[in-house]
Length: 134
Image (cartoon, rainbow, N blue to C red; front, side):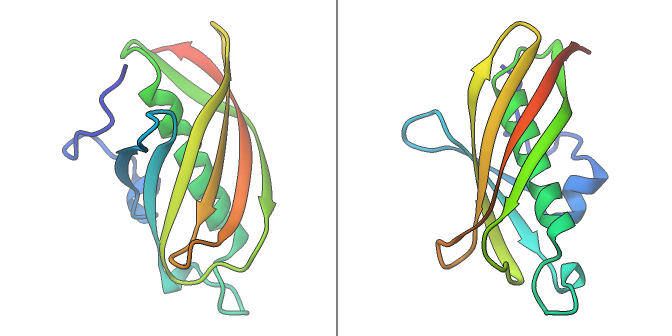
């Protein structure tokens, strides 16, 4: 398992921009919790968070969830990200809940949703990931 809890680890620039913060796993140990900070710079003409930023949060959350399940000599790349936008998202904290639903030696499927400060699911996604040696 890769240690994704180390705050001093190299956080990619995109994850920094999104304000990504690893919160750990829920009480079941199956669902990864990751918080993002949706900034006013992420808004569209309607004043809500532009869908591309939500998709980036989902991509980041599914990827970090997958990494938490892998040995340190492995990594993942996203092959596809099927995203649904369910409700408008506003500026502020958004928490991703991600879990691995399928895994083979070569591939992984991770589902995630984004929940706003009011506990409303604003978007969800299914990511299909390829597992690779580092």
